[in-house]
Image (tube, rainbow over all chains, first blue to last red; front, side, top):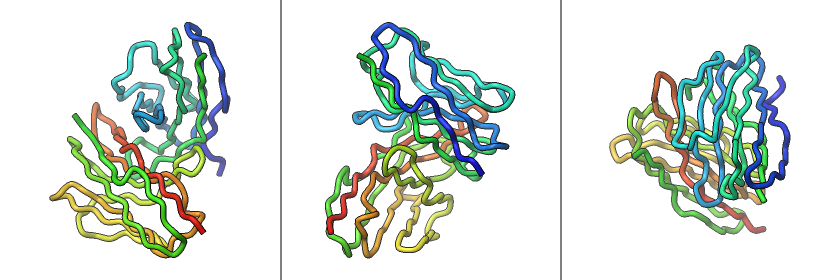
Length: 114
Length: 113
């Protein structure tokens, strides 16, 4: 079966711009979680979507938002980019968003803000 | 505040050595402890642990959870250069009707030939 697909793989943006990242989960999976990975903080939870509803949110400012479509594909948006937003953004696909079902990660989008 | 602490942060060994990676956690509404291997970008699943004292094993890798002392270890025996990676430990906790993972900062393992 196809894995988790994240696009684009790389992005370079300027401070103040906004960006949209996409995640297509494994077919049949209805939960998509997003994580930010930086060298200093490691992986940090952004939010989780299940059946088009945000069920859980991490401690990130409101500039970080997301949504999920009826086909379970998810997008996250970061507005008014800051240098500190440079990171690897990973999404994780799960059948129902519980560890018993497992989480499969995509290869991520590397965002660089200049 | 929920937190997961891994040690050591980095480790350099020679092929054939045995290594033990540590993970301690303080997580409310704990559900499980997960181990992942991250070589380039996508973390790949290794183990999920929910019960104390039951060792999970996969080839040269094994892991165990102690829910009383709130820690887990990941053992790798007869290390190979292909084991070089960042090993991530995550606590899964229930929150807001769903679940989220709280990750440690990882242990970077380098296996030299």
